[in-house]
Amino acid sequence: MTKIFIIALLINNVVLMRFLALCSYVGMTSDVGQSVGMGFAVTFVTVLATAVTWPLQTFVLAPLGLGFLQILVFILVIASLVQLVEFYLKKNVPGLYAAMGIYLPLITTNCAILAVTFENISNGYNFIESIVYSVGVSLGYLLAMVLLAGVRDRIKNSPIPAFLKGTPILFAATSLIAIAFMGFSGLVK
Amino acid sequence: MKRLWNIFKAGIIYENPLLMLMIGLCSALAVTTNVQNGVGMGLAMTFVMLFSEVIISIFRKVIPNSARMPIFIIVIAAFTTIIDLVMKAYFPELSKSMGVFIPLIVVNCIIMGRVEAFASKEKVLDCVADSLGMGLGYTWVLVGIAAFRELLGNGTVAGLQVMPAGFEPILFFILPPGGFLVFALFISLNIWLKGRMQKAAAKSAAKAEEVAA
Image (cartoon, rainbow over all chains, first blue to last red; front, side, top):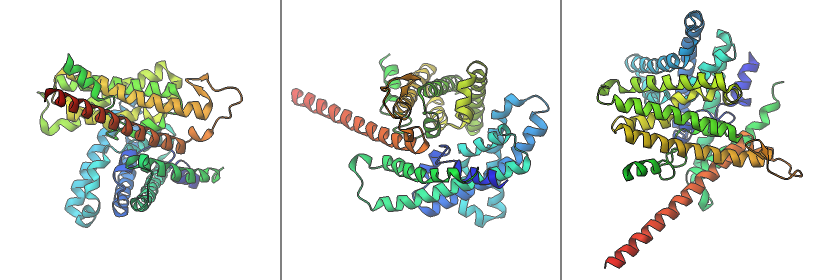
């Protein structure tokens, strides 16, 4: 169990090692507070999506032989889930809604969430393992977001070679962060 | 005809989905460890984009505005499922090496973006030109990045040995950090290219003005 968590969090970090969720990684890290908000919103939705899609696949799609509808069903489930969460938070937990409400609509097309729900199935995880995996992956996402946001703060005040100005420097910096993360690869045998 | 050509051309450099609009990055970096994957992914994307844009363009007057997002998603998901199953059946190795990234075409922002910004308003033929241009723009970047990474990281291009036998592969380029670095260089190259083309266009415009004066 710990192994699944550590691998998902550090060794196969969802952004730095597997290139998932790059759009929001570049788009939402211009300051640290924003990246934390987005990170927690993704964590919340990923765990919720796993809790819904895993039983759906195991008890509905698989027994009925409807596996080929997986892509269609999962994306619709996630999209409607995000909407429901938004309505619920707006009405009942306005404080939390104010903190992460604006990130919720963006999450529907976050590929990390959809990827996690597919992988829970294709890796053959049981329900508990799926939840652990989804928490690991999404905290890994949060970690990568905060790290890049911190680096971007420093980049703002640094002399950058002219040809790397703008987006290229972000990817060059990400490359360096990814090298650091490769150091984790021996952590779990 | 000229109009279609212009629409087609836009996707390749000026509005290149990856390098200029910075969308749909995930799959572009993840699958580009070798050229076969790059070509496979590029073609799969182009297929889904072409058919989704055409279908949505045909029905653009019938689709109610308030329900358009779910409808777009369902159309895209349907074609993604088709290409996923086709690849699993006929190219099992390619499909395995790209793993989860084929089903993830469904949330690729390039397709959603083009469908929303273009196909929901324009005529069918324009959509064909647009999707092929965007698809080609996506594919050439993928193949370019893949060739670069495979050449330096493995000494081969599309599986064929290119580097001399004494060449020690630089593993860095096949690994994720190398992917990020090569991508940074590609964006930088495209910005430079675009700048040059704009300068050249401005120069020829100035010349034309001089002649007219």
